[in-house]
Image (cartoon, rainbow, N blue to C red; front, top):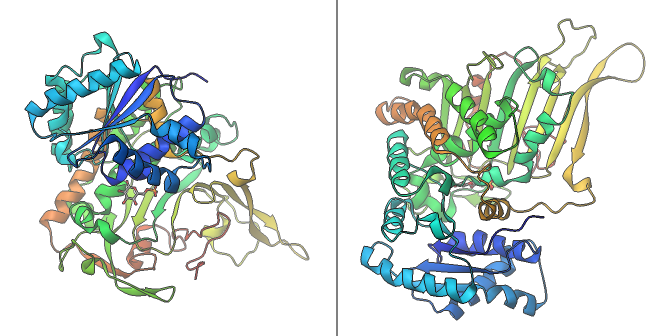
Length: 509
Ligand code: BG6
């Protein structure tokens, strides 16, 4: 396998949780698979004063808890830890960048990393404009002597206006090809498999359009509540936190046209085309097409769960949504008038992300059957997590007299494969950036198009207090009214269980 060029990964915000739980463990997993270049180092940056040794010790604990490639051998772990360094400075102060530059260039010489640097912004979003500006002031955007790449974490903007402003500022300092806007959903193996399922099989693509598909459901439910993240979540809400990025991306991958090539330009062009085709929502229609909810206190599995308004960092009269269910359309030749239903929430019964393709039912119902119409439809369930796999539901004859049909399951589980190592999203994405491949990163225009679509919803919610925030008990599937979004009297959401093949409103007690 192709290895990245020698380089240093510079992490801004290295004393934070993301570095500890995700980034350093993910790079360790790459190290264990021999995917790092010969000469490589991580330089962690932050305001907290830490020596290299203290930083390594802290990261060691993170690796032990969160890396996928486990090892009992301390010497193996230490070989990796030797590549970790730390430098403390105030990243808000321009003058302090001179000292940082000195340390980075010194490390570059010491490690023979050929002046190639990746800068990862694992900081609060308030720093996303400041750090790149100072990096460019100190010529860390100049690629004449080696590559310089910038990885920006979500949230990318707070609404359309701020996203546009951020893009503009970043593009003032770095070229689009140098900017890697991360969405960890794109790093998930099963999300990438959507492309393979669609475009490597002859049987799905002919049916993949408005002639055969009735509607599409995209669900990402989480059983955890907001917990200690109340401070952040209060200013975000489910629409910004999950829909604008991860779930619209899944819709994009389900709906996109086959790309001419599997490369960054072609795949990202097709995703952007879908984003540009979302039927714009009028502010006055938001209450009809988007349901918002907030979890209230409840007993889940014998334990008391706090309501959102009781969480730390949350206003006692907060109207921030912890649940969203919405109906959207993609106005193009393939999808005209096919509803895409999107749903996400915290404190729901289980943690599941999946896409359900509901095919149209047969034009004539030959077989007497007491099941409702919804169940007669063929469904293809693409399970992103957990119990990753594919499930096809189709009608079979019930053995015995007469002709009675019933839906049965045909399923594939990733866990059945001999080689089941599923790399973490950060592992895949960091490796791609190291290789200079931005296919699985968002392009600026697509991010703006996604914000453009959700902006009227944010505005309507802000302006119109009569749009309800429905309460739902923690541990339930959200407000009942979200069922009314789905057209057709017999249609409802699929209520998925932890394991792919089962569904039903409350399958985990
Ligand atoms: C993050 C959100 O982007 O995605 C979190 O900020 C959410 O609120 C998380 O919990 C979900 O990611 P995953 O990979 O667990 O589905």
